[in-house]
Image (cartoon, rainbow, N blue to C red; front, side, top):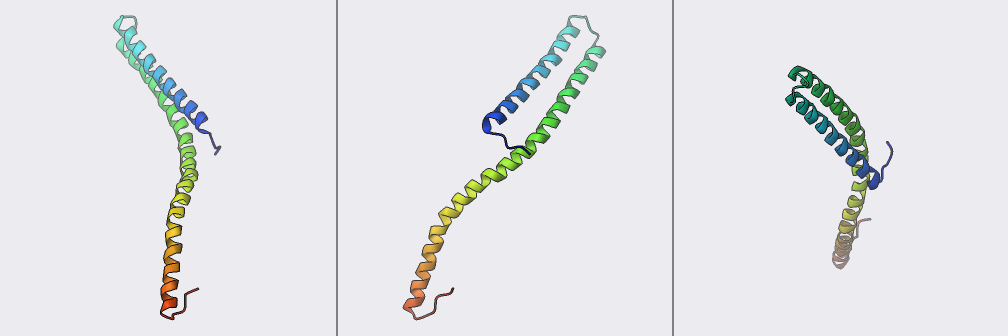
Length: 113
C-alpha cells in the first residue's frame, strides 16, 4: 500500500468528515421535506435508507484502505520508538557488562566472550 504523508492523510480524513456531514444533511433535508408534507413518510424513509447505505459503503471502503495504511504507518513509526528504547537500554547493558568483567578480573575469573 502507498505511503501517505500526514498532510495527505489529513486531507483524506477531512474529506471523509465533510462527506459524512453532507450525508447527514441529506437525511435531515429529507425529513424536512416530509414535515412540509411534500413527501410521505414511507418515501422519506426509503431515500434516507438509500443515502445511509451509500454513506456506509463509502465509509467501509475508504476505512478499509486507511486501516492498511495506518497499520503500515504504525509499524514503520513504531520502529523509531523501538530504536529509541533500545538506545536507552544499551548504555546500561554495556556498562553493566563492563562492571561484571571488572569484578571477574578482580577475582581472577575469565570474562565470558
